[in-house]
Length: 591
Image 1 (cartoon, rainbow, N blue to C red):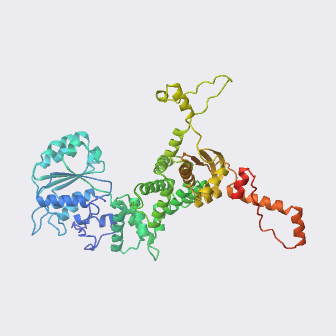
Image 2: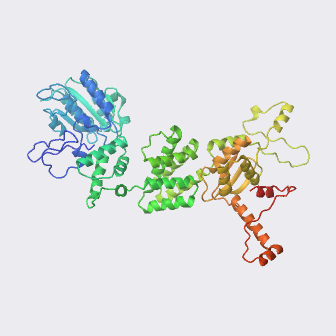
Image 3: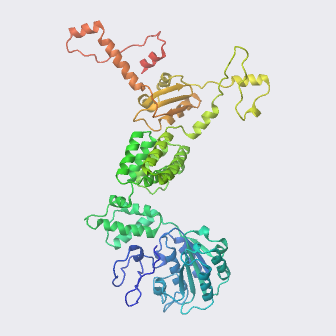
């Protein structure tokens, strides 16, 4: 949260802090006070999302085991400096009834107001970002030996402590290890790794967590109630997501969002907040992902252009795609019970995508998008870079799963050697790395030469259709007949051009079924850029039309149509001939 000291009125009297979020602030406020300052936590109970730290400090104070130095770390706007001031108040708490360190700050103590305003003589705050040298630390060391003026402890709060120079850290070490009993140190930093380990080892460390999105949304909703502002919860959720766990960032964005409804009668809508944040519609980004994974290139590029024209930032769109692939991977890994923080209908769509993708495929998509995100950020034309990333995503979606491709390549027999003369052929060279496992015995070698067998199963697309009809996998059969335009077919492998409405997981389902039925691994590749032939349904329809045309041109039929005006030929039934050995004709008749 914002660490700027709270203002005082013209008379110098401290402006009273709020004792809690549910109570109005006493007295008039000179001018407008931003929400990040107005709702700064005034007690430990007001801190949201930091229960572990509060519990540890409460137990330590109750047991009298109070450390001499604390290190608070976390992202920006999480409440590090505010927490430091609360600890300083707790250390120096005193009122008419209590004269000892206390974590209960709901009743104001003698020093609370001054410490909260950074105006107490015994609580010194120092910004290490602007005072980095050893001379600044020397001032602290010279004053630390003197007893406090009015408080129980002298408390030194050093913000952004990682900015101190090496010499300043070294000068601080001895006093930090053995400080006077009346001195306490509280450090705050966003870069804990830059703090020397010699300093860390002398402090009690508390990692302030990012605030969970739902918790932060609830917090914003409570503040909207206190401010008599009406904002849709979906819009508050967008703010929480954009804040990335920072309370100060969320309150600053909420300040900006509330003004969006100044001229409107109803609540501030999620659409208004989305426009304010410059975010793309996440539902449409999910549509974009579904188009890409379904190899619908034209639809995917059109959707991306539409999102860009609506104000979507290509970087944000690519980041949203990354978030969705991550969410799908979690669903794939742990099941539908994964906590995704998304709406119910969105979770259902993500689960449906997870069923059609393997974990290895999702990992591949994640790497592609991660690289693409960096490209979009650095490219002179971010939209062009986003389009290229999307095309790579489409291409990757048409490839077989990495694990299947690896197994298939490993199981392929070596190519037959070229024979230059009718004499004795030269022996085929063993693949690299297999010399140590090639059999030395000639008999075993001959047996090993005969070992590789051709893949079992259909040898043509027509035989594949016949196998599907025989196995009676109706759904798969209909998808293959309707959506597969064969490009190439050989035992163990098929490439096809998918129809526009082809299921994105058709290649995987067909490969899995063929492996089950033939006990042979099949590589089924969907290539949207290839030029395939007719689908089986189109071929069957063309055959019917050709037979109908042949029947219409038959002289006997023409005569019958002349004798019976208005008669129609409904269909042509052609019985299969027992001696018909043509595989294509038999498959057509079965169809």
